[in-house]
Image 1 (cartoon, helix red, strand yellow):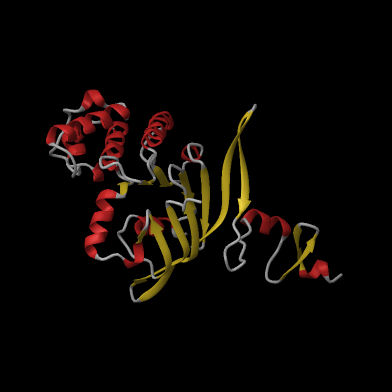
Image 2 (cartoon, one colour; image 1 turned 90 degrees about the horizontal axis):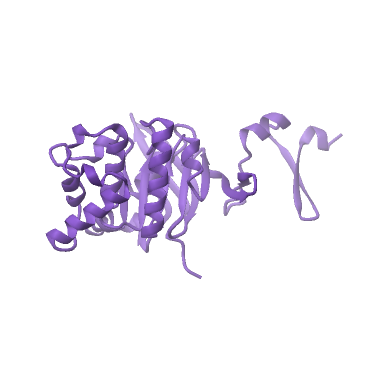
Length: 285
């Protein structure tokens, strides 16, 4: 059986802020298969950005393991880390213009990070990427001459310049209207399929979620729920499951806890192939 492209097990990340230790990730588990598109959702402070920074090779985990395409991210030296960032991952930042060199036209922006092939081969690959993202006719324009949607399309093309195994995207539709976002996501998904590239996207946009194979909810630095989209005659429906980690911990959605008024101790028992939870006060009556 082929190993997943991305494997995170018991991932912990602690950083200091004003001499206070902040635990951003608390034993997070995650697996992403080659070619799979995963959306990561969660409240601010849940650990989404920290996870992306670790997968991008920008930060090292404090504990646990994170492996991408055979690279142990916590054990990489600077030389391997530089090679990893050039060859394995592409990153689309939240603010599209932060990805762009303002003094270069669109074509040269895509050529800039390329490190393989002759100059003409690189320019042809850049033209192909611009065409795939629907802006082939804008190759000669500077970033300042592009609309927000066009700039985001260019940012995607740049991130895909070296045919990465994994594309990371932080809120890729945050600055876009719904129609523009939907069109870009459709073209991005087609490009990912054609290149057999996996993607992890942090988002608050439900439109992004529907372009993903799975939606992973992060709560308190751990994966808590997973949603897979299933196609039926009536359209797409969501199947939601909870994540049971290696330590046997299960995070119930807040709506469940509030509806059942659960707090503190909870009694669990097995009935057939089901595990049932009850409030202790009810179970003792």
